[in-house]
Image (cartoon, rainbow, N blue to C red; front, side, top):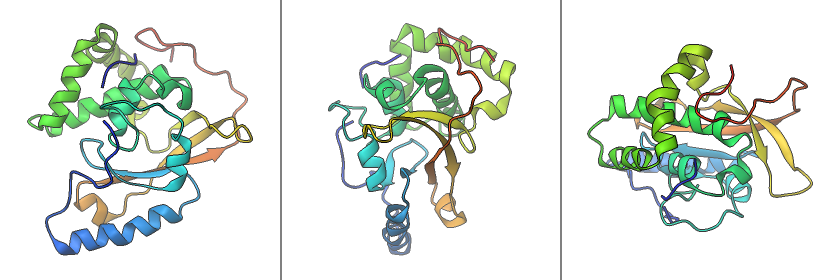
Length: 210
């Protein structure tokens, strides 16, 4: 499902208008940086507002891409970067489909947003991804339930570039405090955990096996 599509930008394009909100984000950056696990704050477009050093290390070896760097827009990275599968285990069934569901939800809430529309157009340019978005996604959600599209609590595989860590499961935890949510942002942290003994999911064509 990898496709065309960010360079790094040091500051978010979604800068809050009020000084109080900017000060809050400046201070909250220290909270994110103090996390020992990969952690990021995104806006409704999935533009990365804040990310810590652990996040940078996890994705530090991906090649440059003009529009889909992980530190710019995480949704674009998952869907379009050719190296995404090198870091995100079971890339298509475990990451792409849930992120396509996130795109669908964002489009329902912010359909006139130009950045989201651009991501949607890029999805439409990829026949396999478009089929997954239009046909596969509704069948998948019907088969496994709405909760499968949620990120909070999801267990995913990561391939860490540090060979001492290697491939491990992580649980994605939504740690968004109320004020951050009021700004239209959310914080997600990837917590490493012991791999389960259950069998892993098969490769996705359009809809994964429940």
